[in-house]
Length: 475
Image 1 (cartoon, rainbow, N blue to C red):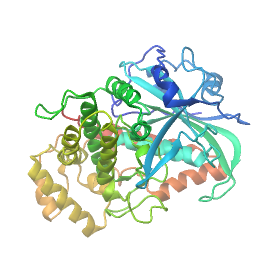
Image 2 (image 1 turned 180 degrees about the vertical axis):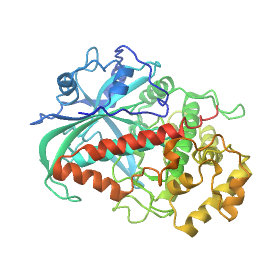
Image 3 (image 1 turned 90 degrees about the vertical axis):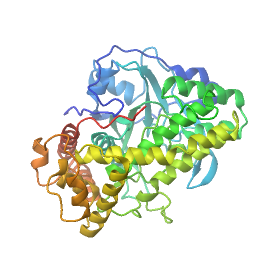
Image 4 (image 1 turned 60 degrees about the vertical axis):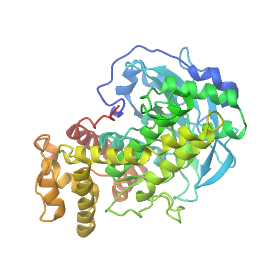
């Protein structure tokens, strides 16, 4: 089976090979944060995807395929790690309605370890069976859902988005029934590698239960596990741990919002339980890439009001930051939290400018000039029925400036390098519009032909190489 490599943005540089370094740090909070669970006993285990590149970075590249299946299909404990998986507890606003009856319903935390850069990483699952939080769900994942997550994480990484990474996919031999796709359909269990699984909803749960001591412990855990910068020098309460954490989350989610917008990506379900404190994009369900510039475009067929439409994603992330602030009122007064939230808009605008210039392959100009460029680009895309992907590809490094306001703005910016990568000479960039995703899945579903998936991953990686490192977030 072809080995599929993967990237992260925070883990974007070539991974450092490392020995196995288990550190199940979350165990110290497990009594009030999680429930021990067992994985489902699947009838079959066919390895479909393993991420050897990142397995090397966490010391698991020496596993043979049977050992891999034992750990990531049967979930035998990894050496020195959790002896029983943990389903995390949390609350959350779902489409702005508070729900106290949620948690990991078809997944669990399986292991924690250090990578070659010393970062604490999690291995978590999707489709690993029922938990106390499954409600009426079967705890399973369709194989199509797993394939879609491979594609989403690969493309987002190539486009410079801080994302979880698909680590393993094993087909499990069950027939699943779903109301929103042809059934019965094939099943799988997915393992994702990420920089943590603590959500905004985790804090909401502790606030609702008035667990102040546990909230303090969780804040300390997040500040240590997801290190970030200090608040501005004039920020009120800048030495308070809760204020420091909110400032860092606001910084991360403002950058994530800009990353999604510049990637033309629509996540689809931006509930508080889908917002990771680490700032990583994760939990991919009804995602889509924009076929054309349309702020009203929605990914989820059930999002009838367009709450999480493409153009409303920054608003949704700010709203969720606000819910974290409400939860942190358990520990701190309002003023320092409001000061942190007030930074979201300027941080988002700066991140949009930084990322827009990166995708165009030009030097970033002063903010006023970047505002004008982005506004003119939106007008140009509407006038010519273009997607952002098509715009960035056609005018990489300032080439072929059109005869309009966008072209005038573009011509003022200096290219960072010539478009000399072979990819920029192709007719179009690799993309994941819905028709392409369905084509890849149809080959697997009807002929068990995985070549289209592997070809897509290779093309996406080539795009990532051509784009190079995304711009760092200023500190």
